[in-house]
Amino acid sequence: MRRRDFVGRGFAAGASAIAGLQAMRASAEKKYDDGASDSEIRIGHTGPYSGPASSLGIIGKCIDAYWRSVNEAGGINGRRIRFISLDDGYSPAKTVELIRQLVEQEKVLCLFDTLGTPSNTAIHKYLNQKKVPQLYVASAASKWGKPKEFPWTMGFQPDYHTEGAIYARHILANVKDPRIGVLMQNDDYGKDYWEGFKQALGPSAGKVVKHVTYEVADPTVDSQMIQLAASGANVFFNVTTPKAAAQAIRKAADLAWKPAHYLNIVSASVGTVMRPAGLDNAQSIVTAQYLKDPTDPQWADDAEMQVWRAWMTKWMPAAVQADANYVFAYAVTSLMHETLRKCGDDLTRANLMRQAASHRALRVPLLLPGITVDTSPTDFYPVQSMRLARFKGESWELFGDIVTAEG
Image 1 (cartoon, rainbow, N blue to C red):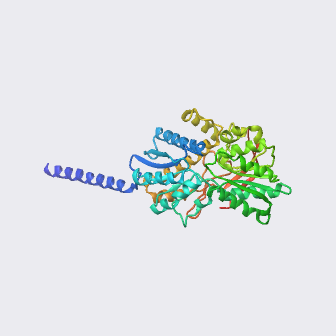
Image 2: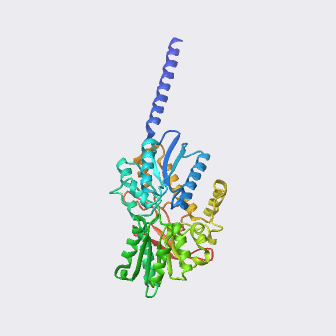
Image 3: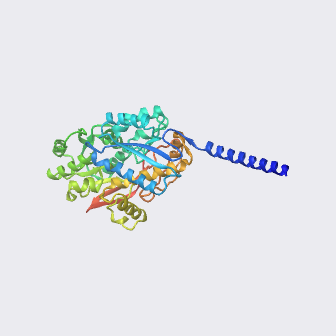
């Protein structure tokens, strides 16, 4: 009897020890850096909820709604997302202050979709020195795709340099005797477009007859548009953020200036730019696209678009679904969602960057057909393709083949 008791106690002790080892092993397999735990993942973000680019603040609001919907569905691998989004007013100095707060006080795991080229430039070196992921930046500056120099920063959409080059090539191939006028925001954002555009013009760079700039805080671009219209230009390359873009389109109409008009993708939203500018004034403008346009009737029965519309109706019922910024926000956050899911229980900053740099032909909701996300340790440009589109009626109409970015 005693022997059986001893054996029973020994068996129980052994089982307990094995269970303890298994629990320790399971615990050891979970790896966390600041901002992650068994129950939560903290993500930081800054955006312009006020200031000259406040029309883009809806991107952060949509991202917040996306994470709330994820949390309602159980989170990611059982962890809730805590999305901390702060208003930087599109001021780089304010961005620096808030990013330090997010990293050093809120202890976020990463920064996600921080908006604006000047703002992200101001925090670029700091985040890389701190080894904090700066993922899927809401700016297409080409500098976000340089893993050797900045291994903790990655962009999302096709870069501005490439987009500018695509417009230049289209102008040279389709406009007889082009005389080009350029309106450019005077910062790194505008300069990236301009450098790609000028480089693609090559020996034809002399066809730029007028190049004017504006400051982001300028109340209007009326004086610049008067100069461009008076220059004799028959082509207009419009490198602006939404407020200035709508003003430029309206002013061109007021001046009865009707050049071949190329508008950068940042300001191609029907809801934010084309309608405020006047649909009649926007006809035949050319832009580039890599996402499905919510105003394009060809996507009316598209399964992804229907899912997005249902989601928007539930989570952002007051939003204007014609605004393509909501499509952008949903798509880029879907990519972040998948990246975090792939991390499993290794929620370290280094593993987060490894997963971000290992997407292969990933289909992200609302990308145009034939366009996927592909990354590697040496390729930090997730989306590298787009198509041209022309504004017709009340929406954009795609034309031509998919064009692959320069990378």
